[in-house]
Image (cartoon, rainbow over all chains, first blue to last red; front, side, top):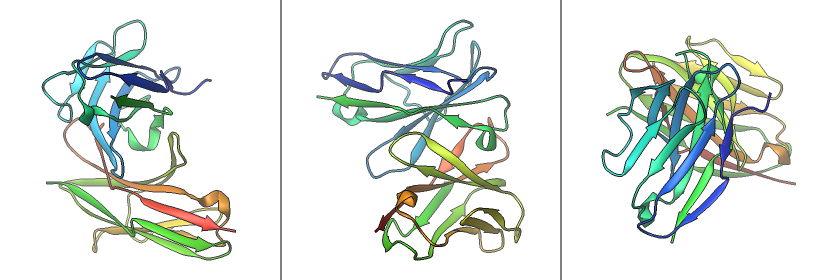
Length: 115
Length: 113
């Protein structure tokens, strides 16, 4: 069981480019959550997805950010036209039920740097 | 607005010391409070607390919730250098998607040999 796999581990993008972050949940987990961690800040909830459904995107900026979790393949967090303020660590977590929290397993994160 | 506040933000101790980390919260429809340890990579789960006054213990770590005071503490006894990490407190509330954890900023603990 490889756990939650995120790639790439580090991503450098120039301002205006697109960033794609991938998350493969643990085997058997169908609930995926994305969090963003800014320097010296706690993790902030962005979006909660199940297969082919966005359940809660209340924490995701309405512009430039989108997320999907297709029937096949990993969950993708896409950031279009990146700006310096998007530089952060993006963590994905998965769980097997809606309980989250207790059943969360976090990935090691993708560190996005916008230059 | 729901919020979770941790203190201190950073702490430096020597091996063998005992430390107490604090977490206070203001959330609607509180469900549970969770502690995580983050060492440069993925946060790893430590404890989940739902009921007031019941201590959870794992080795040298222990935690307790006080719903009256809207707070929790995480104790680490006989600290070791391997305890150096950021300790995150998070709260889950009822309602909404139930997938949303509200995190504090964390306490950065440094244990010196």
